[in-house]
Amino acid sequence: MCMKKMFFFLLLPLVMLLSACDEGDIVEKTTAYKSGGYVVKMTGSIANMDSWPDGYDVVVAVFNEDKDADHYVSAKRIPTTYDGSAFVYHVSDVIGAYTSIRLCVVNNLHMPVMNVDTLYSVETSVVSGDTIYYDASGKDVAMFKAVTDMFEKESCTQCHVNSKAAGKLGLKAADAYAQLVNVTSNHYPNESDAVFFKRVVPGNADTSLLYKALMVDTVLTGYNHVSHIQTKKNEYLVRTLVRDWINNEK
Image 1 (spheres, rainbow, N blue to C red):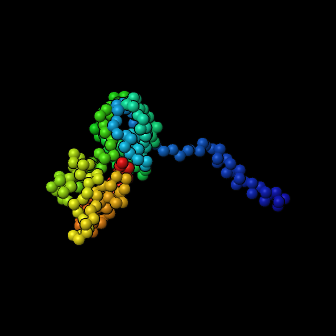
Image 2 (cartoon, rainbow, N blue to C red):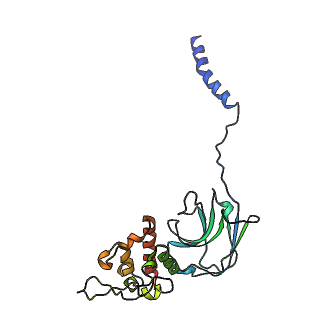
Image 3 (cartoon, one colour):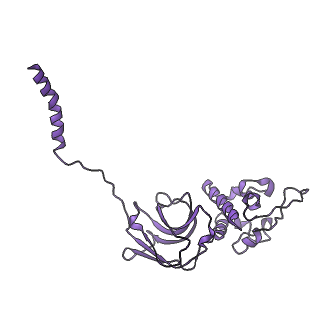
């Protein structure tokens, strides 16, 4: 009799547990996402897509500036063989909210190193229907253009305006290439040293004075150029962009 009572009391909690599970459906945890559900249809030839080395891609990318303006949420790579015919990106496949869609060049850290154009922005764009039509004709993504844009953005051109400026070096877009590539610098380590340095040695950033100037080498240039770069993040982007451009230059 005692054994039966013991068995009954051991069985009772199990029966109550099973009954509780049968009393209603288990509610699954769900998360709501916001998405515009757009489709991007881009046409038009883009110049100089093949000027970038490995590690960089020309893309149509989705950004959420409210959370992270420095890295894209999702992107679709535009092949270097793109001939200007319809390029389609189903943005509705992107999970999460986004505030802009851009044509840009990104590095392998998902960071934009060149913003070419904004196809869509929640603040300014009005889209009829669910398709964003974009004509990229005339857009230029040349790597050296990204470099000269960076010179402007980081205020390098405030001192290096033309050949009469600091170091007799002009970094404006119209002057920079002719005054950098294979050009001997007028600056050298000390007065007794007859060895001159080239500003840019194609294919070799380590021996190029332009790259050395971004390594806080004040002995060679007599000035701390890195102090003009706005943030540590920009310091990395500027230095790696210049290095990769020089090493990719023929």
